[in-house]
Image (cartoon, rainbow, N blue to C red; front, side, top):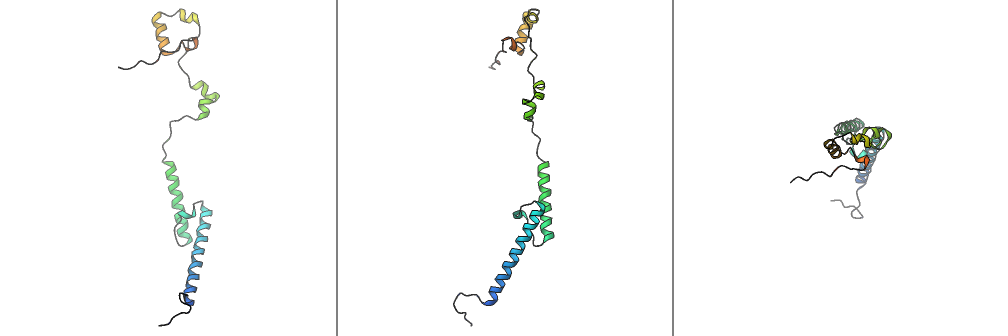
Length: 135
């Protein structure tokens, strides 16, 4: 049995093996970073030992991202410019308004009541009634 002195000191061959292993790890990290910069995929998502394997993993990640974005359901929300801009003013309307007393005078009482319930007299100062409660 051969003992090394001082104790717990690695043998010279072990130090060379550790150095070679560390150089290989650093070369792999540099290659992974290079492929990550070239493809735009984070280096943490890339797996592989050589450049073709890393590029293949990057292409798979890009394809997955494109498929995930295409699968998003469309929203029913309107763009803010449509609602608040000059385009939206004409498109979003309430009920047609009765604006003159002469038009109101030509209507029967039943027609006036129906117009009031539909909210057509709001601009004349008569807002529509609140919704009826269901019993």
